[in-house]
Image (cartoon, rainbow, N blue to C red; front, side):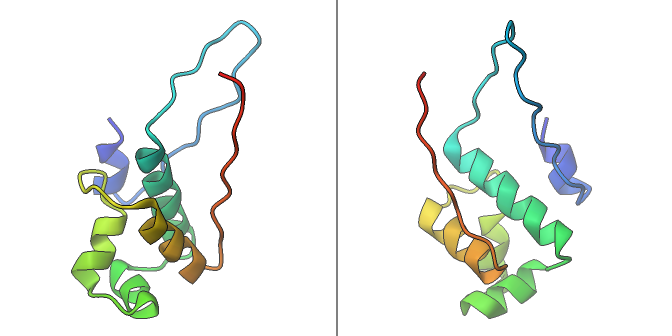
Length: 95
């Protein structure tokens, strides 16, 4: 379902806050991180090639960072976010 946004290079909408009587489905953390990096790249109009240059990696490797079908380590996504002037914030909450 989210592939449409990636294919069309459109921002992936973030979910609204759950209402008191609603239960939200959680995405895997790797998917969430990929979406956040992808959205930030779009917001800053940064291509995979430009991100790769900032990180000292190839365009193909940088493109994998924002690809839902690629397994990407969270530290690599964090490096991508840092190259864009952002930082990853992780929180723990009651289940």
